[in-house]
Length: 76
Image (spheres, helix red, strand yellow):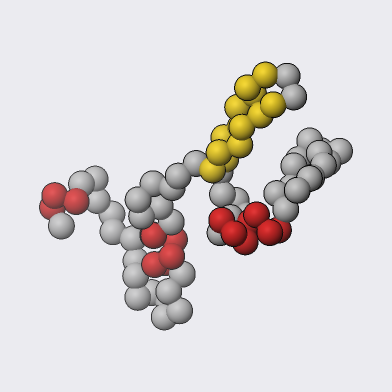
C-alpha cells in the first residue's frame, strides 16, 4: 500500500490497515527515523484503564458516575 504526505506534513494510514488493527482517530504513535528515507511508525500502547473515567462519565444515565475528590484511594 502507498500513501502520501499532505501539505501539512500529515501521513494518512490506509483504511484497510486502520480496520485490521483497530486504529482510531487520536491514537498516539511514535515515529523513528532509521536512516534517510526509512522510518518506523509504532502505535504506543495505552495505559491500563486509560479513558475509563471518561467512559464512565459518559454514562447514558447522567450523574450516575461522578468523580470523587481524593488525594489517595487509601481512604475510600
